[in-house]
Image (cartoon, rainbow, N blue to C red):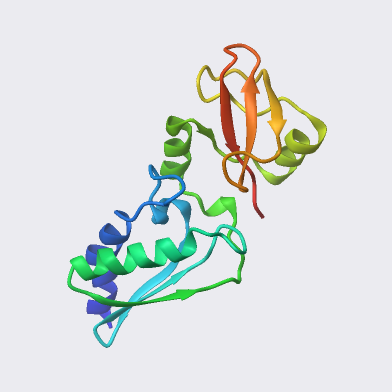
Length: 166
């Protein structure tokens, strides 16, 4: 069993870190927290993934991309979709949050701040261009359902904000 555990760290994680989120290609599925587990059983990699929200259209692509990456590394694999516990933005790694910001998508706030921003118009989301908090909600829905559209009142640039999911 120890050998299989070492394989997870030394072989599987680096492979899975190369699989990008199809909607946000600068993030790996590991940084998004989509991979719940990856183990080797009887020579086959068993990967469990959780969608960022129920009905996320990217999950089929993610599953196929995982299989492809593992096949290129000479592993057979099975992918299982796990719905509980539900994915939360808390599972995005610090590296993933930085990658979001660098890509121009504001990282999610905590649940209370998220509600204040999306429902009460509080100015707490930092502009990904100039870092100002003088930002305004334009639409509760951005380029995908998990994002909202904002505009900076200082530099006038629009940007997406990744909504908090708990």
